[in-house]
View 1 (tube, rainbow, N blue to C red):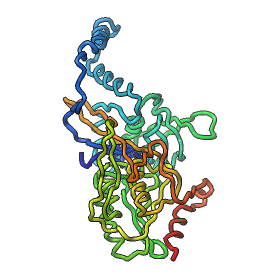
View 2 (spheres, helix red, strand yellow):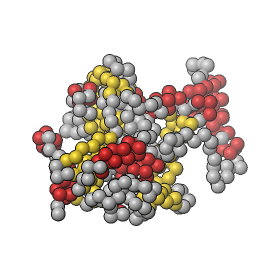
View 3 (cartoon, rainbow, N blue to C red):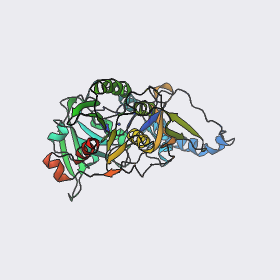
View 4 (tube, rainbow, N blue to C red):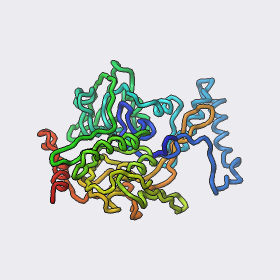
Length: 397
């Protein structure tokens, strides 16, 4: 999760969410931090001795490696990447200058294949092809795992970096090597990229005068967008509100707090807990405009990070019930820190977040109040039993 301004923590292949690159999967904090401190931890006095083997290896490469001269910048970038990889945290990593630039591009629209993806595992995974997109036309399916891009093996490559590799100019092609459940061998899919723009907020008034609000990502302006749409919905005096966070994988931490505050009059939204055990309480802003209306939140297995924070806050505080299936389980906060001389940035996990009741949902997820799965038969028939259940609950006297 990230603080504003400093991925449906699902990033979209068109780079729509979580500010596409930074929000990937999850919460991001301090995207535009410009300084690095070591807090209360002193730098070891023997650092110079500790790094003697590193500089010895550097010298060996520069004097004995077969192909000379060696690209010093690539050596430096590789050293940073290896250092961060050694932490064993899939949410901590290095982006080179080009990747960091792509990740921070504006969101007016992007050229890509048009699919929501999950960047939280070992490989990039398809969450949902966007209707009418090249990804849908090519037959990509929910759960497809991308193990290679244009013949390049993605083993060991940060899924967020892999996502950026799928982006490309409109009209160009990309070949994805896919592993699919119940298909014995990996197979290639060639897709022609297109220009795709998707609104992050959708709304409607459903049967029974029930307001429907859907958010695809917690991007930089999502709190403002949600506020504006809520004003329109509340002016129609709905009897209840459905907040759809399915397939939303997260984004900015403070945006999540702002959005949760639209539904909570006061009190704790979440806690940010640091390595030393200290906590920072994130409080509701106190100026929400939908704090009393009966409410249901929809989630699924791809609701992650910021989505889980908001849903967890509303559930813990007794403000709303949750319908769907157990969520993804992303409970950590990342900070993007640009490096000197425009040499990219590091993404480092700085904290975990907890629900108002102090629950850590990382790798566990939120359990819905009403467990309602969606089957393949439902999808084929165009049915949405989760939405139907939410309408039923809000329609009760």
